[in-house]
Image (cartoon, rainbow, N blue to C red):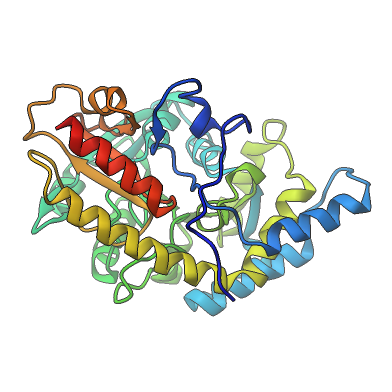
Length: 377
């Protein structure tokens, strides 16, 4: 079956956060991480069927959605997950905040690398915990851990490490060796690890398999909260459906108790979309990856020709991390917005002088955005 990723869909006036930011202005939004493609056709078909049922009461976790998640993890990632390990949440950001909130003391430290997806930096502050950061280092065109620096950043108060795998915003796919070294340090310091793996369905480099952090060993699994959702892969962020995989019963109980009275249950449409995406939309996902690889190729070639701007190879996600520090631009995000392209400001990721560009869009949109960026320079 042929899928259409080229048609430009007008999202203005549709309550889109992405497009609403620049309402009434000639600015192409290429910032927040949702794609401008229609979701897989099977998803709206399933939602229409559910709507036609006509009754929308409170929803328990859907057994068929649970089965779809478990089967997907086994089939695509060779990870055997017990259905009891799943805890459903209305989003990844909610789960990040719960992971911080379940720590016992406001003195407890939460460690994160930078650059990083902004909610990693905000969740500890939101919950009154202490944010600790350590910088990734750039080596041979890739962002990597300096493991000695990482371990030195752990203090007697550090209780939780927030991991982004694949990494947002740099698009890194961490190797098994890197994750094993990271796990060894975290185990030695008795850290809980919350691993955001929401982009694991969007691996662009076919020779770089995704490795689930919790899948490294039973000891690691017992200390890990893995966060996933169909939202990024199938463009379903508005369905508000995510889940945590928590193998250890005591850790799972702590997480679930923290959510009581604070976090709402999911709605029936989220379960319907999740089940359908994982059960019926694999061919669409593979076609999407092929399209994104071509977008990446165009983007990387174009950025190579931009003065003072550079980017590293994007191994996963549809997000590019552009280094503008060698340009004469003081505020890159403001500069490109004035030129008609809305990008994410690297300052919110802990690294000023960078911008993040979302290339999950029709090629014509990407070409127009790149044209505006080029003209602005």
